[in-house]
Image (cartoon, rainbow, N blue to C red; front, side, top):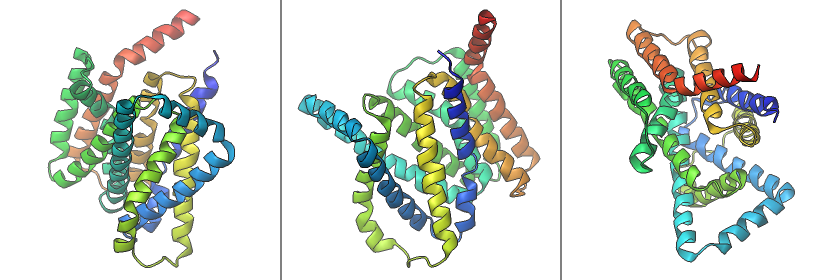
Length: 301
């Protein structure tokens, strides 16, 4: 099977997500909770239109699958879907706070260590085996986090919260992979939108009058949520999760590049050492996959 179009889709998706700061930074003066509310409810609106208008057969298929399960299994899945939606919202909210009020570097760090944290949580929760090589990468990551915490402990805590929340969300999604991923996203966002409606009434600020706010929100919803989700879902049909696991690093690397070059965020020698160790940990963590892919390419020649 020709995988080029699937790999290209994944590359474009993570490349787009790497520029997420362009949607968030211009509206950093707005409360993070307000940005979350608008992103959530407008995303739900578009997802409902897309799914009901063009994907009703997928909705019907998933609903029939859900109804066919035993009551105990349905209850378990309902808890997972609801829990996943709440964890995703926590991830979204804290990521907005980190990007707009901590630093783009801290946001980048979150998704640099996320795949490693996901694997460790899979070991702890799902009892998945972890090779010695990956444990070595985990040890390097812990050392890097210790170094990066010097003078920036609070920033590191924010980054780790974002990473752990998204890692937990990924693990929950693995348990829900029998359902269409786009339908699942719509359902989870719809659930959390209903749950957060009272918070909107209590905590939402005045209706924004600045055109820039709505332009950025639309960019966040369409360009940084729906389009890359479509591309990512398409990519997963043709390439394995290990390849995606490597390509996902495009996102934080782009964020880090923008933090240093575009946003001119200062970086100390200690931070350079810490980020360097994170990069080494990533290479060690993915070394088996990289070597395997390299071997396969040679064997195909």
